[in-house]
Image (cartoon, rainbow, N blue to C red; front, side, top):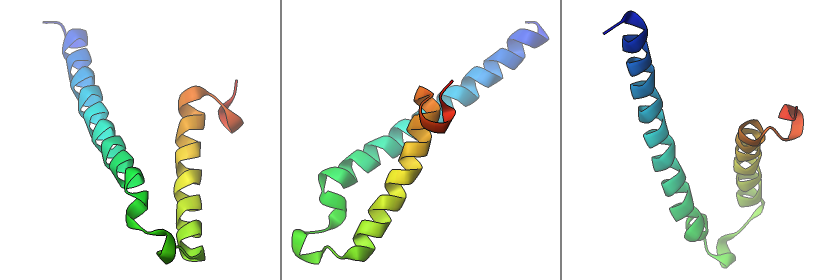
Length: 74
């Protein structure tokens, strides 16, 4: 096996590992979202809104990079 093939195999392994980790995080976020972030309507306050807006901003940054939108548009 050549050095290039070995380097590619390591890169592929690292890519797959990262992909599985991302998939696990997305599943956890989907479950949390389905549970309304473990809150009930009677509990919601402005702190919850701030936290949710923070999560949304971070996810927007990720989706903008992934889909080349927003400041990452080409």
